[in-house]
Amino acid sequence: MTKKTNRRILLAARPDGAPKDSDFKLEEVAVPTPGSGSVLLRTIYLSLDPYMRGRMNATKSYAASVEIGAVMTAGAVSHVVESKHPDFAVGDLVFGQQGWQDYALSDGKGLRKLDPAKAPISTALGILGMPGLTAYTGLRNIGQPKAGETLVVAAASGAVGSAVGQIGKIKGCRVVGVVGSPDKRDFVRDELGFDDCLIHRDADFAEKLAKACPKGVDVYWENVGGAVFEAVLPLFNPFARIPVCGLIAQYNATGLPAAPNKVPMLMRSVLTNRLRIQGFIVWDYAAQEPEFQDEMSAWIREGRVA
Amino acid sequence: MTKKTNRRILLAARPDGAPKDSDFKLEEVAVPTPGSGSVLLRTIYLSLDPYMRGRMNATKSYAASVEIGAVMTAGAVSHVVESKHPDFAVGDLVFGQQGWQDYALSDGKGLRKLDPAKAPISTALGILGMPGLTAYTGLRNIGQPKAGETLVVAAASGAVGSAVGQIGKIKGCRVVGVVGSPDKRDFVRDELGFDDCLIHRDADFAEKLAKACPKGVDVYWENVGGAVFEAVLPLFNPFARIPVCGLIAQYNATGLPAAPNKVPMLMRSVLTNRLRIQGFIVWDYAAQEPEFQDEMSAWIREGRVA
Image (cartoon, rainbow over the protein chains, first blue to last red):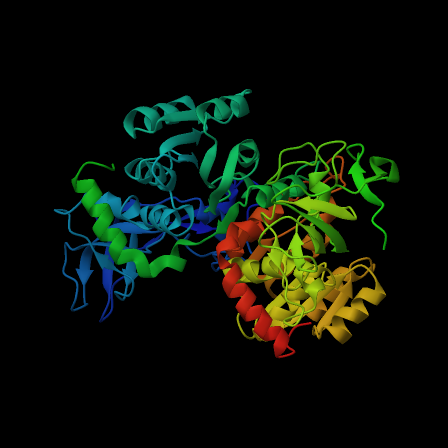
């Protein structure tokens, strides 16, 4: 690999609805040179996560927007190709927020060294990274799955959903995934070991979901919003918990959906079933990262999560 | 008072929408005679609570429906007028579920003796009874108000809402009530000591609410549902808590309201603000009744709640 240009993807415009190619710009610039106290990083793995859709908007959310003309933010696994920083050597493997680009400079803040002997380095963007921590802390603090309960996981083939379901199995739950296509279903059911997995695009999805949850639903992991949530709503058992982690079905919405207004139906179920619906952001539970790393690494070594 | 007839109010039909007179029947029957092990009770105070609307329906809820032709259920304060029960003497004052009638028989189960020297006996239906316990446990377990936070209370002049707001003041919150009429507002603001109180029927209610909550809303006590909830929704601070105690605005509804469907807007706020919305029924926390009686009695003696 010759160090010639740095390809980087900038946010060119704020998407209106679903992002289009023209909302981004591929730019080729010279690879930067690290000054004293910094390192030059070459990207090996980039992450592409649902939260990024929110960062493309100017609207207030839990994190700052990406500025127009700036490199899209993203976690990345990189190796150090030049170092003028005492803590990093050429060849070190690191995780950090390098963004969507081939090369990035860093002053070392927020960089975490990775040990490839411990786990594949790509897991720093998945099961041992932010998505895994999201699954672990959302279940531990809000979902609180118990043996014998039924856990339904939206977006079950994604980085977060796949971790949620696998933790649910370890906790002794019946785990039912919901995905958008047959190949994702096969992966979730056959490779991840969920008890069942359904496709939300099926015309009879709500009926299939009810059949797949004969004892009702005790924990619903909300990643999606919209129609999937509305299909789960009639199935909740008393004292069910709903960690709200994401709403990807809504992220591209430009207005509210048509009638009727189902807030009263939702609130009635909250009241009569004593539901707990609680939103969270992974960094709310940053203090639990060490326990997460220990427990999840052990589960990986034991072959209980993939 | 001559013991001649027992007037009792039966549920004659299941209301469709708002209850009508014809959904009830006033019946006069002979006053019953207690057998061995039971007492005859004469009603002094009857309660009329929002939960009763749900009991008039056949639909599944957290408590059994009242059967057609049966006496409407209600808590009541009574005195013992005849006793063939070793634990109760004529003249004893008791609280129990005597229903909407002048006289009732009881085998003593669920009867609680009242001491008029401790507190006015009517408080057994209010601040020291089920409504007070509802307020106390819902705030303690879900609302968790902290000094300096803003607490908004729907149905603020009601038995539950008035207790919620007074406890909120004790905890050091700014307390804003919401009611349906000027006389209720004056009562809540001038007699109960809430910081402010608004009338949800005002055309500019949402603007007034925003002005009354300059630091946003940290706890919203949901008793009402519908338009009040939707006016509070844009004001929530991060990590706000919403104990869902009742939805009186919906109890007479026969269908879902018109467009748009605001569930996505609600869920977006749940996610970005990490809201906790949680339904509860007072009996979920029955085990906390002794602490409630101790603490609330002390507050009454100290003149901190009325």
